[in-house]
Image (cartoon, rainbow, N blue to C red):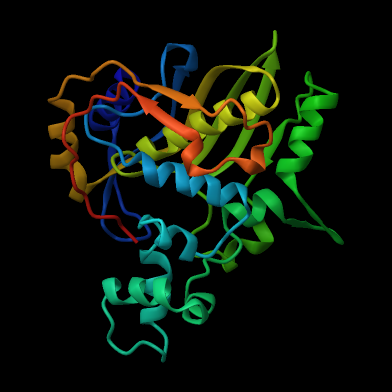
Length: 292
């Protein structure tokens, strides 16, 4: 996927050393945009194998409004485990358990998961229960209704950034604002991402919001057109530089195709089995440590 390769090259060429919240250190640039024509294939990175199972389960988790990691853990998805574990480690309840042992307790003990597996009002809570003055807004349902009644609206917006609740979130939302655009019966999506971990996070983000576009297009009887990814702080962590160089040495393969179960006409009825990826050829995965 040339757009992603060019993105990595841009950071390496133009980025400057910058400290960060985790104190891992980054090479950082500010302001970048990638565009993906969804009629040309599904934008899943091919220069390393991407764990699509995690992308799908996380997106369904967002859509249903969940904020506890237990449903992800039960489906073998590990991408959010470090954040609640970090909080648990700082508590009096921590008995020296490793991350692996913590995750097993989340999996096996629903009461423990209720106490320690919740991330606060992160994405799913904001999409489905955005807290405003005197009321809560189901943004997703409102968005779909607005698409039906006013497809030319410039207010087809989904926001994950809710300032009064930021301090209650395990991680303030990185992908903060999504805008949808309908023209000639085609649906395009633009994501603004305030902070982008170029090596680990961005491949997931691209696939996730491209998939959301396909899902909404299907249930609204529209054709998916384009996904536009606009990024604020685009960075490569210092402990990912060798991995990025390896990735850039690889030639991208043709994009795969994503097939959705055409019988699903309700965004809230999709399940993992409703997605089929075809013709995905990728180079071997490349491991990298997440900075928490």
